[in-house]
Each structure stands twice: as C-alpha cells, then as structure tokens.
Image 1 (cartoon, rainbow, N blue to C red):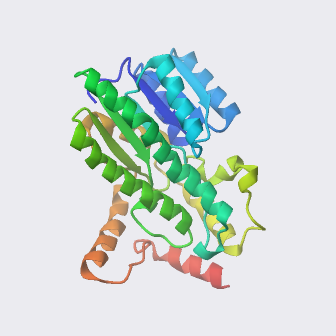
Image 2: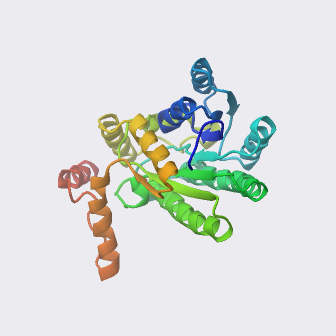
Image 3: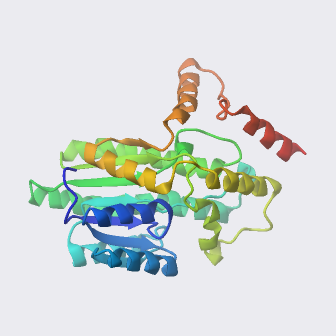
Length: 300
C-alpha cells in the first residue's frame, strides 16, 4: 500500500493492545477509522482519544465470533466510509492448560474469537475490497490477520490457543494465494508476535457468561495463566512497536510480521523435524528452564 492518508482502516480488538496502537498509527497517518471491540467502555475511550487528535472515527461494539455482528460492522463501514482499504482482524483471547482438560465452552470461546473472528472478517470484508479494486484501478487494499508465534510452534500447556493460531496462519497463507489469483490490488499479511504486553493475558474479563468455564480452573490452567501473566507482562517489545512493524509490512507488501525474529530458531527446528521425520522438538529449546519448570509444576 503506497499511501494511507484519506483511506479507511477497520480494526477489531481496537480497544486495547495491538488494536489500540493500530488505531493510533492510522490516526497519525490521517486515515478514517472503524473501531470494533466487545468492551464498550474501553472502545468509547479509544474512540474519544482518536477523535481528539482529529481522526474521523466510527466505533461499533462487535462480538467478532458472531457472523451477523461482523456483517453489521461491514455494512456500517460501507454506509459511513465506503469499502475499506485496510482491515485488521485482530481481536484475540488466551486460555491455557492441558488439552484434555478444556471443556466444550473453552473451545467455543477461544476458537470463536481467535479463528471465527478472522473467518468472519475475511468473509465480510474481502468481497467489498475486491469489488472496489474492480471498480477503481488505483484502489489498494490489505488485510492483516493477527496470529501468534504460537501459530508457528506448538508449546505445551497452551494447545487450545496454538490450535486457533495455527489455523489463522494457514487461513492467511491461503488467503494470500487466493487473493493473488484474482487481483493484484488486494493483499494480506499475518502477524506472529511472541510475548508482547497487550493485555491478552487478562482476556477472561470479556468471556461471555454463556461460555463460562465448566467448573473450577485445573492446576494446568492456573499454571498456564501464571506463566502467561509473567511472560506477557515482562515482554520488552511493546505493542506500539509491533503495530509499527505491521504498518511497515503493509507498505512493503510483506506477508510475515514478527515481534521477535530470534524466536524463529525454534520454528526452524520444528520444520527440520518435519522434513527429517523426527519427533517434535522442544519448542523452548533456547530456554530449557521453561520446560523443566512446567514439568515440575504439573507433576508436583
């Protein structure tokens, strides 16, 4: 995307973390903003902040796990600004623990937001962007889907999250191929951040009552939450830095976007195991104390 000024950006999960920083950068670039989040108060606060710096903002409370809600978001976008140019399918939640200890509601919640949210975003917005491209040879569009380094690795005790993010990586890689089959004007990127302070570790605050946990948290789930709190809150790369990486990638039409490139050593080890028929390697090989700590806590 060569220019941003005057174009429209849609951002889900806009009230905190990466979403809030996407909005701040887009406002500085003089884009029109459509902000979506399930947390009304926080959404209103971000919308007011960005209007305060001169941005034109449409804020829409949205549960991205619901098809009709995302369809309504797309309709509101078109009504106010026309087809968007930049779409961030960014809303996400975290829930860790051993795979067999998750109830159906856990799976429905995490996959509903992390995967179905992206599916609905692509389904609702990609056709609008492709139609705009057909109508205007100068139109440029880009979709950015937020996955995770957990979409490229398989760390233990967080399998539910891994599944959701691996699916987003596969979806976005396929989307890249599909888009380029039909248009040179619309492209996409996938974000694979490692541990970045975004607030995702406190995402239980927005868990719907009808999808409440079935029973008390297990030991593995408590351990996962504690480790997530520590890792996320101690992250050295900020959400603002990762958001800037994303905008740089859009400008350069770069697909993979990372916060911690050094973590790719673990991805390489996984790929090599696949190619050589080896068993899955330790995803924390560069920090073996993590594996030992997990094993001690879960066996103790």
